[in-house]
Image 1 (cartoon, helix red, strand yellow):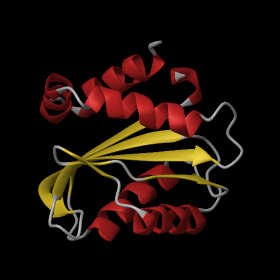
Image 2: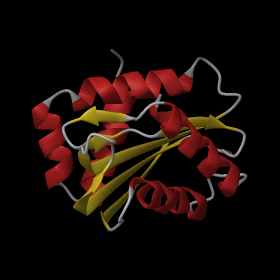
Image 3: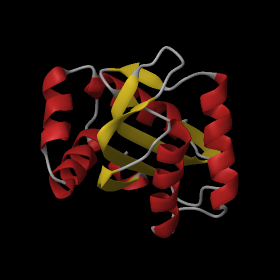
Length: 150
């Protein structure tokens, strides 16, 4: 699966809201050339987030969308210096994994990525590894772990 998914890390990010954080990460994906239509993808991610929060606990948000705005599938990892309020209940996140998947993805790639990341992020040691590492180390770790067979 790692050959099918690009990974981009962007650390020391700042945002005052969930929408601003997602927009910042969409900007990163766009600058890397992984999008056909940045505005369409942003709209799709925010619409998905309105439907049901992507907060998964432990200070982690997992916003995602299958979108016609995506050209190449990508996982973008953002670490935020100051945690951002993510839910109406006041839960905050400092780590965001934005999953960008093409609308016509084969083999349910988005579900495989979500499932794999959710399983990895259940482990405190993995979360601590991500939070304590630099961008290159996290990039290598995610590429390795996403590529592993279950």
